[in-house]
Length: 316
Image 1: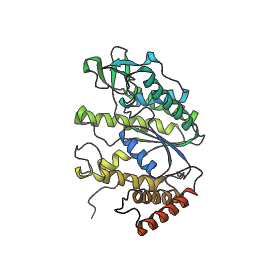
Image 2: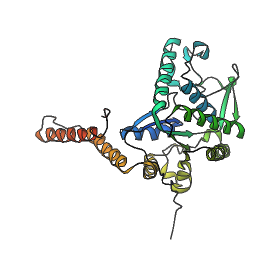
Image 3: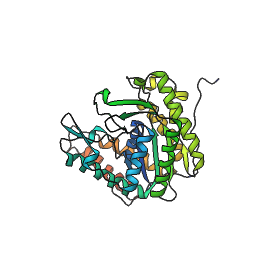
């Protein structure tokens, strides 16, 4: 008898190699995946604009990265003694315009250079809802806790969603490796503040728009992370206490399915060994001078050196 519906990620004919550069952008779920890739010592750059949720804002970020287009002081606003970019996460905020601009533009240059060599790109959309900042009549990526009276919430239309996704793919294919693979997913994080019906509508619109655009391009694929949590795991025990975000067990389950579909065998071995090394590095002995600990350290150094020999860059 079967008591659950298992969702599989179709195995890819193209695999992520040990030296492949992987760029990720989008919601906090994209960051969770990027953290695991980074922990496995793959070359990863995640969210140079900070966490982004809607396709319009993600497309705006990709265009800026593609053009290496810096921000200027006129692009910023001042609120509550901070200089803010409404296109960025609050981690870029500072008291002075030159500091905010320096952080933002540095990440744009890093992102532009990284994308030129990227062989894999992961995009995770979180919501079809967006907020228009009324004083400037522009859709923003982050409201920065500015009073709601300055914003108008809107549900992006199907055409706005598909146009954003289409343009995003064009710019990424133009700047990245000629054989770049672009993986799209919808975040399983539930935006309950929008309302349950509204959250379901928002996710459905994202899924519909993605599936309309992807067949028009080569090497663009949908990764069913949303479906794995909603239809496969399908239980609140796979959420954190907030009942919104996937917990560690759920993330590891999605990660395992993703790895089976997209990692080459040697890449999987490389990542798993790096996970074990990372865990070993967390060990704090009672006596650092104990002979057994010294032997442990030498063994660990040898394992790191063996992993280092597999790549041309520095790891750990």
